Image (cartoon, one colour):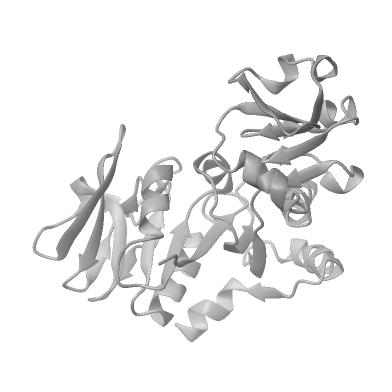
Length: 300
C-alpha cells in the first residue's frame, strides 16, 4: 500500500528543516522519517554549528544507516539498500524513545519505504539539491522552509525561492507521454509515431535535437533555459520539476512526469527581519500563506 510522502526542503543549510520535521513527528505517532542528507547530529558536518536532534517515540519508524542504530532501542525490519558512504540502509521501528541520527537514504530505499511498514506517512528531510538527484515520489507534498545563511542577500534568497515556487507550476505531461517515460533513466526521445529512442547518458547540451524526429524529450537530470530556448520545436519532460534551472513560466514546452504540491511555507528570519516583508509579499502573490518558524517553537 502506497504511503503519503511529505518532503521538508529548505533553501539553504540551517534554516529550520529539522525543527519542522520534529514538529511533524510530534503530531504523527506512527510516521516514518528519512533523510537524504545527515540530520540529527549534534553539530552540522559542514558548518560546525549546533543542530537540533531528532527524537523519535516508540511505534515510530526510521530509515537510516546501521551505524546509527542501537540494537537495544530499535527493531531492525528490513535491509533496504547500501549507501556507499554511510553503510547499510535499514527500515527500523523505534522501541525506546530517544534521539537518533537520520541519514543516508538512497533513491532505492525511499522507493521501498513507500510500500512497507505499519505507517501512513513518510517524512523526508533533505536539502533540495540532494533531492533533485535522489528523486521525488509522484503526487508527494512539500513543505518549504526559507531562511538566511550567513552570507545570503535579499536578492539571492528571492531568486532561489522564486525558482522553487515556480517549479510547482510546471504541468504534468499527458498520460500517454508519462507512461512512455515512467521507467526511463537516460535521456530519450518520443517520436510522433510513438517509438522511444534512448540517447544514453550524454549531457543534453551535447545532443543535437534537430537531427531527431522527436516530439518529446525526457530529461532525467538538469535542464536549462538555454537548451529549451534553442529547441522550441519539442516538448521537454522532466523527471522532477525542480531540475529546471530557470523560469519555467517563460516557456510553454516544459512538462514533468511527477506532480508535486506545495502545502506549507515556513520562514526563519529571526535575526534578519528586514528580509521578511518582501518575501511574504512574494509568496502571497502565488497564493501561499507564510508561517513563522517561531510559532512551531511556541507550539512545541
